[in-house]
Image (tube, rainbow, N blue to C red; front, side, top):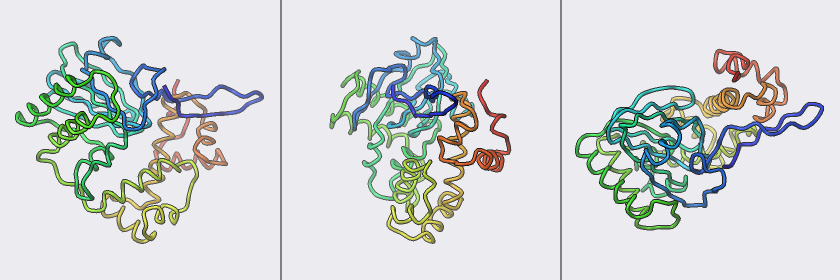
Length: 292
């Protein structure tokens, strides 16, 4: 298990406080190599944990939950909703998520390295948008049957983590495209937005100027602003602020860290300014979301 570092100081250095971060849930010893992929049945792991997967995240992978039949409860960054098969949910890299299943629930969990998004064919390919932004939905009988057959084929290839298996990757891509049947195509400019999102994730606590992000995607601040407003409904700075606030909420809810520790982790030199920022973005004070 890798861990997102959060140091805080008093008279002596305290141990890091973190959100649980796994390559595969519950496997502290295993580190995911670049390009890894893994599939297993829902029962294979969840039955070992009383059919409940506690909140955690993957910092280098995207995860697809495929529910073929039966119920599932899903939490995404604290929001709770239900799935009833045949249905699916795609959890992007970094999102804190948890699952609760019934013993009747059947399906698969497919985990793919974040580099898998590079298989998208240009800006208008919905595969890139789905893996980058996430999504969920129900499946038509035809799509559900195809997804289940492909998942079974993947299980048959290898029930352990795999890297660089061209057939596995091709079947996984076919499965994702089956999820996209009837879905809207991604909007033009998604690739630039994907790079922008990646840069924000990488430099979140550094509070970089907008010119840095515009240069990273080969454009101007004005064009970046037009792009994000058109496709994401917010200015670039607004998106960065929302992402900072989301990370602050995650750290407060899932680690028990103090507001000043979270402020320090996210690059806020002044804890009072962080508290005002948090209140403005969430409508709550940091202490209101602190884990008990």
